[in-house]
Length: 388
Image (cartoon, rainbow, N blue to C red; front, side, top):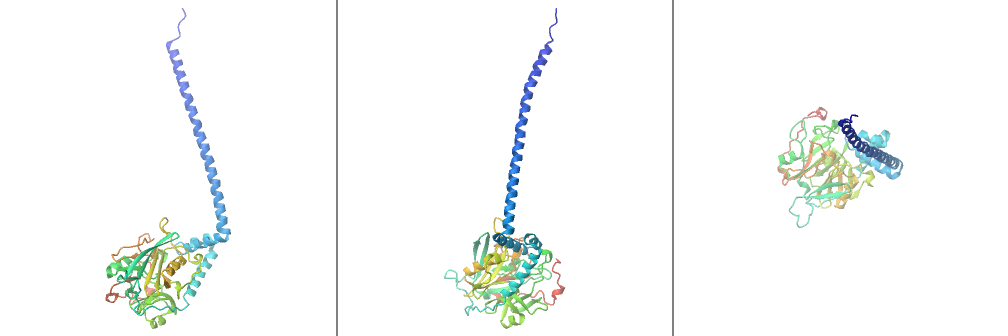
């Protein structure tokens, strides 16, 4: 009698059949993955070609067209005002960078030559209208293309004093100066030696005058210097002067900085492309009625405020009636402090606020404020600007 096939043979055959049917779907699942990889590769190639074409067209416009050149030099100017000045050579070339810097130095010197002839009322107090007659200061926000800032108006210019640090070897934050002296407002003022952009804020550039007295003289052999300040009658002075001229004019508060951008009611910067790039700005101005204005524009903060050119600042101040205006130390030094000692704007410095050698502060009674000369008996050559 023939033997029957073992049961296990059919079972194994069935099992093998099951395995065979289940293996087929696994093979078909690999095909969509290959198609996905192919699709992603095609997408990558399209994006790469599109990006390459865009970069090529942009580079052609940026480097070969007149309109591109305007923006290229504005970018270079913006880099020149930062700690990465050398990067500008990749935008306009090393030779053009040297020429650009030299051009601005000469331009700023020339802008300080014309003598200012503006006058203010004898009492030196600006008219702010019925509602603001008794308010010494007011702050308003200003906006423009890509920037946001604030305009501090001081009705009586004789209420402004130049304040300096109270400790040797280190600058002082404006918030500290305001709280320490009881001021009702304050802004950054003059420039200072800043080695590697990490200076201690204690060594001013040029000259510092407070209360009609020379606190610091770093002119060396120079006979004149660009200054921004106020005389004893409350009239703003800005431009190129010798120390002797300043004393004869009755200077009261002054720091060295430039350029002057408005004189005798007219703007000196012809257009935005010659406005020294986009950056945070601090500018001091005066109206015909005597009121002093401080314009502070934030910058280097995408999404909030990139910054403004000096031409932008000039136009804002002309719209507000300025007859004279001059640049102060802007950039990461730009700061506006209110009477509570709080920062109003958004400084671009990583620390939020820098240590500075000078600040213009507003007081109800400036004559009662004692401002010792922290540099008395010191020689500029003895000050280490980088030592903390």
